[in-house]
Length: 432
Image 1 (cartoon, rainbow, N blue to C red):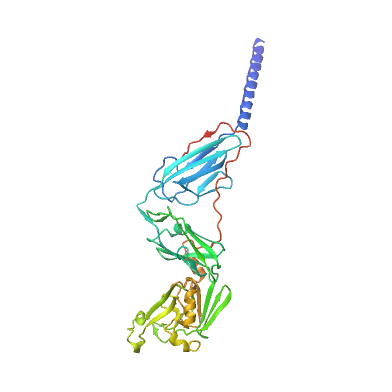
Image 2 (tube, rainbow, N blue to C red):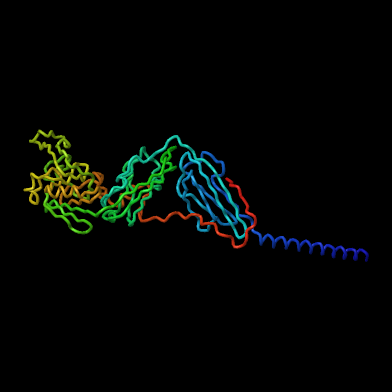
């Protein structure tokens, strides 16, 4: 009996002890639920990291909170980035400048606490770099609606996808276009066949090349921006059968005059070199005076029996690399509208030729019809002669591009006040 009493007392004591412990556990759990953990920030690359590859990205991430502010600088220059939809991560948009120091600072918060983190790191200085050697058209130039953008690099590019991805074309009025690599060191952008640039607008090329790996161990040295203007829509049609040229400016016919085109009759390797080539040409350059000679076809200018010639021609506008021009020819005005007598050029009356010369823009359209000889797609700037699908496939990314204004990457939102007064700020050091 004494044992049973003793057991009962022990059981009661144990029950009281368990009850007391259970009460404390509940209180701790409720406290943990009302006081969330501080946001945990991670920055990559971590503070103090050196020789970071330039084609890396900067990443900021947070758990138990949302990013309030992210600031990244390379010297005095801000670095663009994009915030995730849920506000928990930020990633730099473009690659990093070689041999540069980056400073990253970030702030995150939840309902009651904030946290900050920072990182300073340096990027690798590569042994070899590449740059843009040339861009056509020139910066600030006013050009025609067919104008392509030609980028030539100072060395061959093997990682074409990465380089092409870094090239951004923007226009005030949307257009559809695509890149095509004509060589390992040259890439060309043009609009879709028969869908030229809209007239009277600005076009901007931004090449985010700093840090892009163009080949093994070779990185882009610097970014580049380039802007030009699209002027009047000036489209000329040369009908070699009716022997007339018609000029339409901004949808309105402004000129129609007789011409004399290529006479034909000199066949080399199956090609009649005296025929004007049919197809879509672009105006390329203008020459107040141009010396034209038969030397281009291997005939001495003095050899008249075999078609030798050498003439000084005024007001000449080049439309191909094979020696075709729209130019003045006073001595053949009598034949214009009646006979084709040139060696392949478009002979025009002096008054019209001078007008055409004075109103010329590089990249104006000159459509030639009526001959059996077709202009090659790479003869001058006759790129519209290539079928569109084939042109698109000539790009490393094999895709069409819409050139309208592009939305800027989303930045981290400005810091907002927490819904309840925060506890003392917590600082979280950057971690790898």
